[in-house]
Image (cartoon, rainbow, N blue to C red):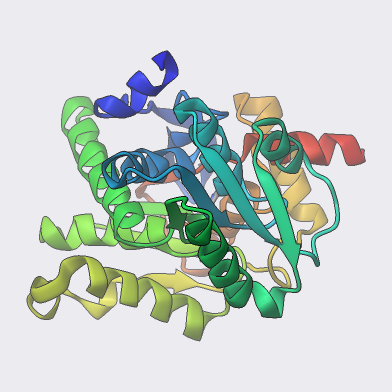
Amino acid sequence: MNQLALFEQPLPVTPVTPLRMKCGQNQFWIKRDDLLPFSFGGNKVRKAAEFYKEIKDSGADVVMTYGSNSSNHCRIIANMAAAMGLQCHVISPEENREILYNTRMVTQFGAVIETCPVTEVAQTIENRKAHFIKEGKKPYFITGGGHGNPGTHSYVRAYHEICEQEAQMGVHFDYIFHASGTGATQAGLVCGQLLAQDLSRRIIGISIAREMARGREVVRESIEAYLGAAYEKLYREELLIFDDAYRCGGYGKHTREILDVIDSMMCSEGIPMDTTYVGKAFWGMSQYIASHGIGGKTILFLHTGGAPLFFDRLDKG
Ligand SMILES: *Cc1c(COP(=O)(O)O)cnc(C)c1O
């Protein structure tokens, strides 16, 4: 049970370090959530730490979740379930046939991957749950990507952590940029900001997949779900910035420019980034800064992980 001691206490604070990179006379810093010390790190570790408590308290004996073959979430949940000695069952859309490092690890951790057409996901999840219950098992289902209040809460905490680090280091971040997928990371950061009634900065979610209307609405709904009764009083439209201008055609799609940014970050800073999430968002950030004429600011980029996807790309040459 030793590796689970990590989840029994507050997670370690992740490093915030300056980058050498310059763009528009801005100062750049990076927060390394990719270095969270469990299963190659990433934002899904923060989320999993919240689900860990819920799974334990529920007395579940099967952990179920949903995700694609490239899912960092599925890797971490499968790893955590294995460490907890629990069975793990992953529902995955059969459209992703490619076997990536995350897929291999999910299998290596002993999880069963059940595939179905993407249109039948909800039904497949319900059927499988019912099947487990009929067998006398107690499944605990985690929404894809760790979406939901526990996931949001993990990034409310991360927001407080960033504020504490600013105080310690004597810096103030005018902007926080990050990759926004299911929106839980962004919802958590923005809730942290709303709860602190802190109007001194902007948090910019760079969409890696969803288009504006739906993507933004999902983040807003998560904020509303998390804040509950306080939503009416605290919510401010202008603090929810979700930009879909850098999707490059959608989930998993990338361009030569993104690959160049990734290579340059690895060479000059020693920081690995993947094409699906972090490299794309980092490139999106530089485009956003240029197109919005942002200059002379202090900017934090949140590295949300995805290390195994970095190696998938190397494999492809
Ligand atoms: C899941 C993921 C994201 C997106 O986080 P959401 O909370 O789903 O928006 C960003 N980066 C990486 C590496 C991820 O695995």
